Image: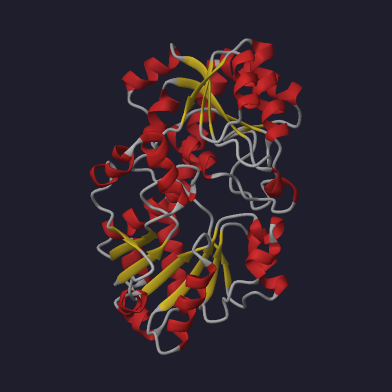
Length: 382
């Protein structure tokens, strides 16, 4: 069976965290002997910024890092209808150009014998509602929303009739506990690492409250990685004694976790205020690696994790300071959080689990052509 993914970029994860999960899903599908192809625009802003900032080699290395992923770029002359006709399942990520979203839907309506899914992994349904409401999704077979509150938003707004919750997850072929050597390095390494982009002000206050100020007050050694940090933010990091390392390829993140003793989860404000229950993908990835994690406030409305057991949750900057000190000074607490986090990810939140969920959706709403090619439930479980 052939899966076709339309994504903003699979090659670049510069300010594009959705690439992490989508890579993992396609890798899992390929490992199960499904055919996969990703299509991305040749002039996408993520890859363009990656090349501008890091050089062409950063993009060229993708093929060596992920030899199991097939990616093609498209321009204005690309024959999308031919690509769609060759696919059994088409997954369109929400950063796809609205005109192309409509064109793909038209191909489905005009006889396309493929199952068509729209995948939403952003907060625009509440923060920029018009951008989602104006999308032409009537010809899509279903929506995959990365949280139940987002699923409910689609249904309440009447944007779709078939909407399924499909959380992000960790690619545990990449994100896994460090070897014993790396564990020893962590014990003697820096205190804290935070990996995330500054963004457009959605968590500026939160980063100051839960990252910068507690680290300054504790005098922690720490590393911050990510992009789009304004000069003012960089000055704050320096004043707190935190080293700024800029962009980091997602494939290198497990090593960064292994060289530090604790990390944190700082969700963007729209998810806390309007879309509870949706963590950043870094939370899945960090727990998969076994690094102890402390989270700024968010509501685990869907009970994805075991709060207080898989990670610590705090409600204020003072509480973050106390929790970080506890993790760093109590090896037993740190080890317990590490074990529990790994356990929960492996039990519930791997890309393998999400592919199982995707296949279950296809058994339910897929075209007859797709359902005929799906493995039986017992076969899929094995």
